[in-house]
Image 1: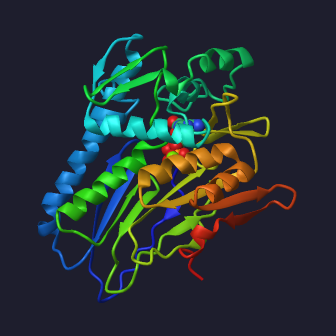
Image 2: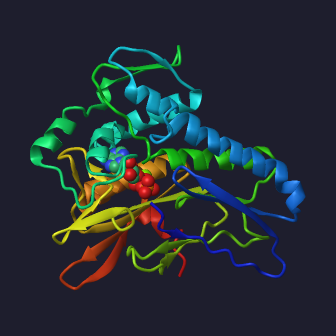
Length: 334
Ligand code: ADP
Ligand code: MG
């Protein structure tokens, strides 16, 4: 979820070209550094728009009825579907991250996401499912029921699973757009889709990109910490409980679902940020870490050398506090 504010300070001697639009149920923004005119940039701008349209409408959307994913979700057990190389890549990576996170990141959460009102159908106001409804949806979990045959580009299912790649697709798209910009000669750039970021090179000269992490509250937009990309090619992805949620009887239900109990996460961890070379990995891990909670996530991040930053809610004091792994340290400004 969004949680990153982009700092674009336009110095007099800095040339930045920015363009953007809507995709994947959110917005995107691309900033290119260098002395390029708008007309020079026009072809790459169109390529970016077309790539994102395809990723969203044809591949990963659970809203677009004809996306590969939506088709797969309607298919019967055992029926084969030929999919794009990108779909194979995302699903394989999701399988890998499922294993690495002990099931905290699980793209078969589709039925649960819909049950809790965070799917394509409009939510019934304040609807909280019963334990037995949750149980019925949980019966449909299990990434082991997704069969991927990369040699034939075919996927199929061994149970009536339903996939939702919202926790990884934006990050994946960010990686692809960054690659596209680089391949078109725009080495120094900053890409953002719905708060998942990737930056490469410099904003100008030796000035690196400096995104800010947002305070995890829905009511206002406020900077919590500022990062420095150091000129590295890095992605920053965040997950939080404060943007996409509903509240009933004082309980907050967020769109991050714990696949182990079928319920929205409910602990003191308000936001997680992960820095990684790959935005897809950062995106999925941020989701997984929010599900795991502070203790388990910190342990996992330390054990696997993942640069992570956690903002927790101290409910007694009614304030936030942060902790981070040592790998995150070098990117923290100040
Ligand atoms: P956002 O989509 O707001 O940027 P995330 O990247 O954290 O936030 O993805 C959250 C989305 O991922 C949810 O809206 C839901 O569709 C899906 N999701 C929820 N829980 C999980 C989970 N445990 N594993 C994988 N995907 C999940
Ligand atoms: Mg995510």
